[in-house]
Amino acid sequence: MIKILALILTIAGAIGLVIGVLGAFGSMNVGLSPWALLIIGIVFFFAGVGMLKTRKDTDQIDADN
Image (spheres, rainbow, N blue to C red):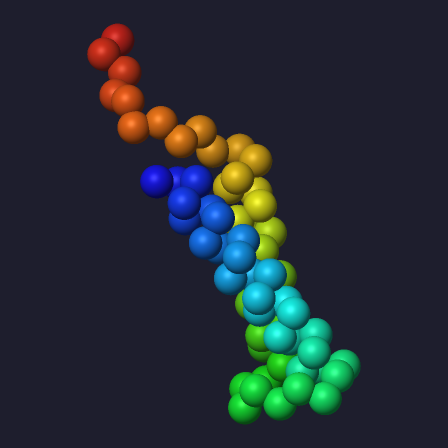
């Protein structure tokens, strides 16, 4: 479950980064502030990548307790 959320955050962050960069430095007009999209994209992308690198995706419960 954690890996799925991390993958969704990574993809959403990448999309936000692309739209933000195109809006800020290109000719794309999305109706929102491109700098806000760029910052949100950076945050989501690095949060997703960090979760993919550090979290273990196990649905098993330890019986040692």
